[in-house]
Image (cartoon, rainbow, N blue to C red):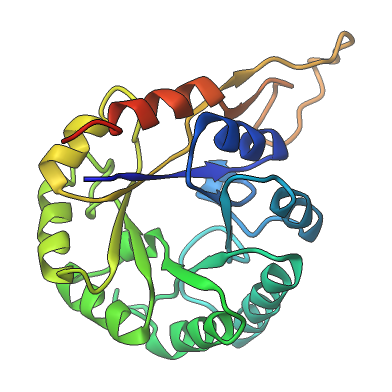
Length: 248
């Protein structure tokens, strides 16, 4: 079984590393510390120019829950148009109702806006906040999404492997189940064996030292008080690809 690797990329260095490491696809986003937000148009445009990997853009206007106001839906629709304008291959969307069911009206608008522009659609991990996984999956399939990113309603995909396998069975080839959360070269082979998924999602990030030689440690920038950041490692991407490249 061929297993596709998608890398969550929060900076241009991560996109380049993902391509160099052999990933098939990247999810472009910002603010990974809060679960990811829509990246800037400048970042998307530059990322699209990196060869060898498909690019999907996260459409999420703010942190927090996935219940959106009409104004926020307008923003998301504008960001879908931005992704298409920049030449992205797809978008990653999702919306819920307060009772934990899929917001079909909002999701339908986003899917139709994406498909009308030739973009593939992933329903993101809002899925893992739903009240009924199977009912939500059937709803997402009916709405025309191409895949769903999920940890199997668990803190990590490995912990949710049994639910992921059930989702693969229910999907029956009608939609791709993309397993994400805590995926690494150490556990990806076990995850695939237990769940039966054919697509996995990872950040493959490692600490990236700062280029700064001058520091002012008493001045902090939000909750991050260090110039050091996390960025995708091409070597970790290669290791994940290698772990699932043989016959499973």
